[in-house]
Length: 455
Image (cartoon, rainbow, N blue to C red; front, side):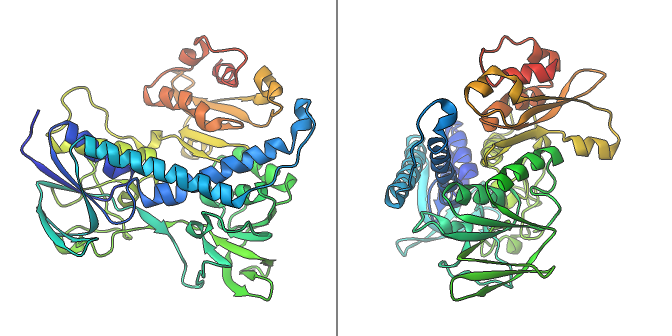
């Protein structure tokens, strides 16, 4: 199939390269512009390094607690150079794989910075100093995001760090104050604690992970406290002062935390500056590009996907948005079609224990007055959790009491990020609890808790 249409994509992250390969397979002429790293800066400079370090930290924790498995304990120590090499190797491999895939699909890759000059034109300042003007039938903006830095602090990359300053690691801090207790904040608290740092977590609300299931947050808080993490609940950081030995983080309730380092983990902001968006009539909302169900902006033929769209900042969501854009630019789907339902996106938090959820939350249902059925099964009731010497956590499934349809669920425990896929599939496909309950699952396996919770 060969369609005489041109798609220009600005940004080579999960949204951009998914859209590019999907559109190219449909016969679209695709040009992708990337100024930093193919595969996406947020993905390869944030997500992959942090998860790699978390994985290494988990291996250390396991090695240092072997007595529970009937083995003699051995004290593991981190090799910073080897860990750095491991992170760089994974990043390079993933970026190379993306580049190879794009080239194999005939996608034209341009290194440089792009600016939209009209609805059907893009100007590129190339990395080699040259300039290119491209024509386009459709344009996709997916330039990602970067760490948010409040006005009252000035990161120096040495003692006061953004999350992106933390890897590859030069050293592991003796002590660290982490500002922000959302997903990124708790992952960093877990990561540094795994490597032996003394961690203080500034929690602006009365629980970590505000907005998440309180039972889920409670399990994580208990884990943090048992590992010596200090929680400053109900406190907001308002200043960071340098001291002789490090930094002092000052909170609005008078408390302060003195540590060798401080890390800002208070969200991100979209990369939508200097793209010519407003000049071509795109209405921004707090820097984000509002989109419709087709991922199209208020200007026809200009689409947005990934973090800049203001939807869920997840690589899985960005990739799916990219594929939906590719469908749209060729004239829409040719067969059965399901619009993106962001309320049904699964997400995970890579702490210890892991946390994952999808669909309707229990608190959300109660707040809206919706009748639900909630079933909860602890992993301690499964043989595999006891065999693994890790009985922490639980599976919770939320369903419609009248129809049995699975509406959502939460998992706290080992491999939660993998196990949530079962509930995510049930939520997306409108399956019933009986569909899970009557599945013949493996024994012994942690997934047995899913079937028990579905009974």
